[in-house]
Image 1 (cartoon, rainbow, N blue to C red):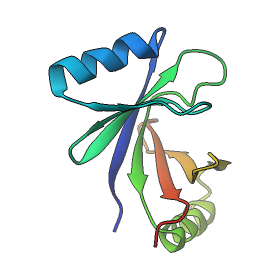
Image 2 (tube, one colour; image 1 turned 30 degrees about the horizontal axis):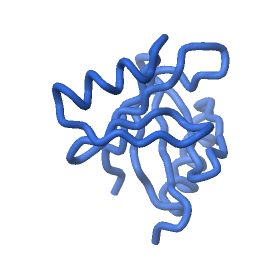
Image 3 (cartoon, one colour; image 1 turned 90 degrees about the vertical axis):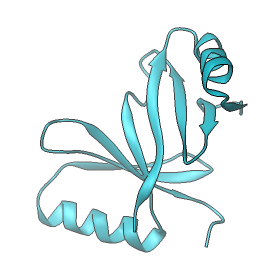
Image 4 (spheres, rainbow, N blue to C red; image 1 turned 180 degrees about the vertical axis):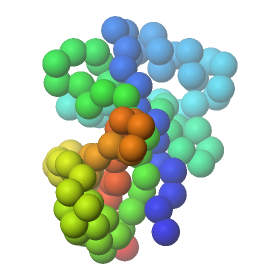
Length: 113
């Protein structure tokens, strides 16, 4: 069963935005080169991407297993709903849009059972 993993936002200054979440919501910040700055809260995270042409944009991520992601991809393909699988190194994300145009990501982290 998919569960909420993260909400992705874009910021002109990810460090400043992260400090806000740390100060006012008690988020635990994690910085990894080549990845968005993560602000972890109980039950999920905020992925703070730097604004620009290579940002992943605003989206909601749902954590799924490999099998769930594969089944979702098949269902999206059968329904002729555009989707794009992206390798994040630490995870694989399947991006698609809901009927109202909101971007969603079904994400599977490597090394998780």
